[in-house]
Length: 454
Ligand SMILES: Cc1cc2nc3c(=O)[nH]c(=O)nc-3n(C[C@H](O)[C@H](O)[C@H](O)COP(=O)(O)OP(=O)(O)OC[C@H]3O[C@@H](n4cnc5c(N)ncnc54)[C@H](O)[C@@H]3O)c2cc1C
Image (cartoon, rainbow, N blue to C red; front, side, top):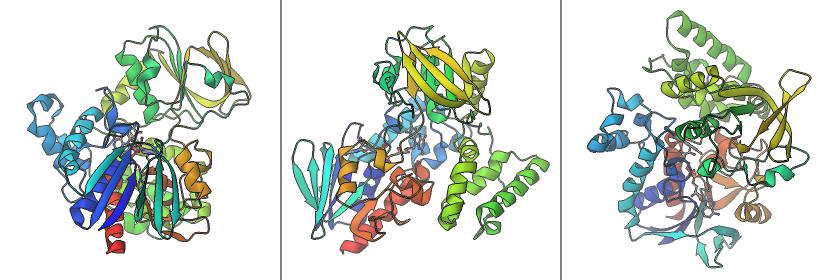
């Protein structure tokens, strides 16, 4: 019997645990989780029915080889009738339903005698003689033969401003996933949401759901909003064979050609992007470091809005708010925040030589999870770096690792029996944040662990 410890019990951690106990009676798994509910993590812990899945229901099954598990669950309960549609596989249902589903789905596995769950925060990990020594916040500890890092998403980086004193005020909210920013908000107060991606949209929807009537500002470097999905997706032929082995410039030119063809044939551009999506990981793995950097500097923003899309109804809601001037999306950078009785925020406008000053009573940081592990203020992350077990990747998006999840140390050598699953692998895999990718990564890591300890 070998001991495997998993740190983090969100979707990535619990699915790695389930795959381990499903595939081998020879492993004993200890899953350590804190802060967010087991299996639900940040994403599926929301209580708001306004917050929708950004992946169609048909792709949210936790097992790659059993695709219909989530949709079958939805169909099994009459209470969910109103969410069912003819095209359930393509629909975007509330994330809290997925939260209920995944909790129910994991429940039977929690009775397995080879799985133990500990509710604690891991604060440090040391390694000696091919064993890991895990220390928790309550000063208890345990030893394991293999370790999986599945800590999920960390809070967004604070805005890069000279005087940060305003960020300590109670109405600055560094955690956009905590609904506390809605508490005691007066209906007519103005709010700044820094960022203009899906997290900003969630916060905007939460504000509207409580009847907020004040102005909502959203600011991001380019001021792009996520693009909408299409109501009825159309199949576009696979063109991966034209992309294989090509560099970024060649790939962009092929994609542009297909976007034009689709337009000519009356096929929505979304179908071309969706056809590309399952191959992005392989294309990314094949890019040179220079191409990865070019992609991040020049393509990431446009790819982000085309790939992380909005359900059609949410798109229309957003347009409606812009048209009635309640939502204003600004392209620019927050350059200073001062607090008197409210926040005065100076925004250096994109492609302009001047700045704009806005006054708001609350600020929520919706800029997306911090990926620069050197800057993550977390004792476990610092301990892993200081003990030479993990090393931030060159792109500052996660840690160095093999595509299959084996963690590499700072010299690029695999750390024996240390694995990672989830957004921590963003620099290596690019697409490693949503359920369709995570379920595969979790299963692959489980298989590797079983193979290495047998
Ligand atoms: C708001 C939001 C919405 C999303 N919506 C979708 C969607 O609709 N569809 C989709 O496919 N994907 C979505 N995603 C992507 C999402 O990240 C994944 O689907 C998935 O839930 C991530 O799970 P995870 O386990 O990797 O991370 P998390 O859910 O972040 O879970 C990590 C867990 O590890 C714990 N942890 C961290 N450090 C420690 C420590 N030191 N000790 C103990 N425990 C620790 C955390 O507290 C947390 O409970 C969304 C993400 C977010 C943030």
